[in-house]
Every structure is written in C-alpha cells, then in structure tokens.
Image 1 (tube, rainbow, N blue to C red):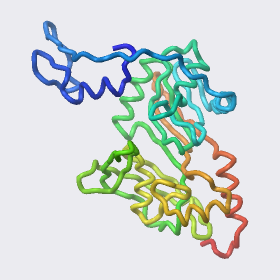
Image 2 (cartoon, rainbow, N blue to C red; image 1 turned 45 degrees about the horizontal axis):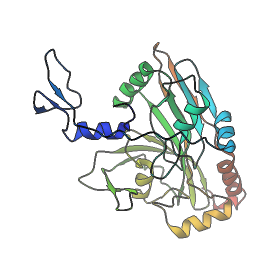
Image 3 (cartoon, rainbow, N blue to C red; image 1 turned 90 degrees about the vertical axis):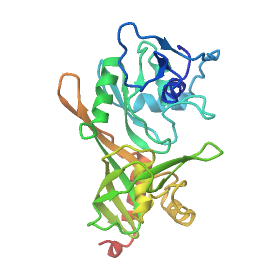
Image 4 (cartoon, rainbow, N blue to C red; image 1 turned 120 degrees about the vertical axis):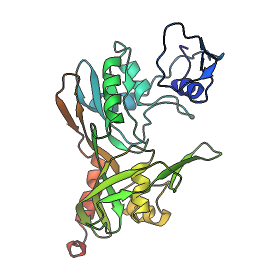
Length: 292
C-alpha cells in the first residue's frame, strides 16, 4: 500500500477490515504457512510534489540537532512546528528533515511532541532502530522523558504523582481534547518542584504513561494549568503571562534517555529555548519576597 498514509493502514487493521482465513485478526497476529489474507481495496491518492519548507524553518532545523549517529537523530524541536504534516499543514518536522536529508530514505518519527511543545524529538534512520525504540517505549520504564513546565500557582511539594485516567475526544472541528474521566485510559505523571516564582512554579514532569496531552491535562487536574496553554489554560492567566514575554505553551522536553542497539544507555538533553529562559529571567526579577 505504498502511498497510503500509515494512519489509514492502522485504521483498516484496527477495524477488522484485514481478514485471515475469513476471520478478523489482531494487529499482533503472526502469519502462518498457508494462511489466506484478505486486504480491502484501498484508494491510493496521487502524490503531489512535496512542499519545500521555507528558509527560516530549514535554518531552525539545521541548528536544532542535539545528537546524531548512523542510526538515529535527536533534535531540539522548535515550538510552533508540528512533528508531521496533515490537518491543513503542508509539512512538519519529519517531512522537512526528509527533504534536508535526502540520502536518509527511511527517516521515521520514534515518538511525537505537541506542536507548541519544544525539546527532545527522536527520529530513527533505520527500521531496526525504530523497532528497537518502539519496544522500549512499550515497556515504559525503558525510556525516560523529562519535561520542564511552568505552571500557574504554588504547586505543593507533596504532590509528587497525578494518577488520573484520560479520555480523548475529537470535536466536530477535528480538534483533539482530553479530559480526566473514569472511562479513560490509565495515566500517571510524576512531578518535582524545581523553582518558585510569584504565583508560578517551575516543575519537572515525568510521564510514566504516554497519553495525548497527558502532562497538560494532569497539570490542569492538579489545579495548576501550564502557563500559556491556550487549550487547557485560563484566558486571564495567559494574558497576564504575556506581560513576562510568554507567548506560547511553557512545556519543554528537557531530556530523553534510552538504550541504543549495542546496549549502551544514551541520554540527550535539550537546553531551554531563549524565549522560555527570558520568561524565567523576567519572573526572577520580580519581588524576591514573593518566593517561598
């Protein structure tokens, strides 16, 4: 099914449209000798010439490389750039990188970051590395991701874990919204206070599970939405934070750690972007007596 979006392929398997021996099968079913496989007819859209990213995006990505070897690439993804195209976007990080690195024909996203989130993003150059890292992500504790988030209010030191199931909804507009709900998927995030400012707290977040918008919704559920969050935050808070130069979501993937194919442990760190560092500097300049 070359040319068919991968999400479409996943969907036809998930919906049971692929049959083996006239029966529905799970995606993890292993084919056996003499199995009869039925694949539904799928229309392959004619591919248009890829849109070339503008020069500013190219310059950003060229400067964003944190680590690279023959098997993988780790970049410090800029905020405002989606990880892939679609939903009205002509291109994202992965499409831009494929054009910048035409010799690397198998570049694939290992995981995702929200469009407004900056920080560590891992791209595999080989299928073997992609499978290796996906296996570690499924085991959860094998891959450690740490995020830095500036949240509204005074985050209690004792609140070290938010354990709340998350349910994902898709609105008619196509926008994804996530909320805490008893019917949602099990979700856990560990938190640690890093610094305090007047009515703001810088926290470190460690997502134990990996759900859509998990850190953002868990911060909201804990009573402290992330600063600059236009989807889950309060408009009044967001307007106030603009006075300190914050014009986007203050959520940054600060580091990621995993095992390489040769069994070595690799940790890559992404420095805080200048715009977020300037926000912290502005907050530090406020009345020190307001800090705890």
